[in-house]
Length: 257
Image (cartoon, rainbow, N blue to C red; front, side):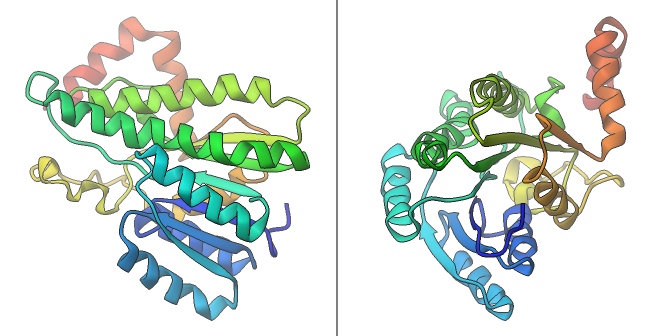
């Protein structure tokens, strides 16, 4: 897909992967719709994009709130008619054991990470189907394939995202609309600024947000269901699925340290 003048909507666009994705798409001439809860941060990103001479639209919206997504999507569709690429990137995690987390804390992760994606897809997919083109990119995590201690609720939201995406991909066959999940390992972003991660160190193998943003651009032209970043980690997913009785005890022991 040639991105020039294509309308790209990115949730969680105020920082991290969302911000870097906006920059990478803008470099290629795309029209950018920036969505997140923090309007001030979005306006800073919009200012950064001015040097690329592209059209931008700032939309303050909490994707966990279905009415806010409905209002945001109506504004976007009235302005542009439809979008070409939907990047469902908004998400967060709270680090802690299931016994320590409150039900509200567990629900909040599912509301943003999973239902936020659902709300956006439900509001923008009809216009994509009408014009028989478009691509949905759901930003998940390698945690969509590994149930890990102390982020079980986050893993659940990403497992759900991957499963939903796989089912939807079958439904979209021959529709002209594609869907791809981008699943990175740990990424150095403010994702880990939540107080619950205070004592959790970054892995030396952590990715930059720019690396993941480049994978998102690749995903926009990909027929694949899932792109794992880096690709070498796909072998670990295969091992876990093929030899779970061997791999799962190793994972459990490693992440409890």
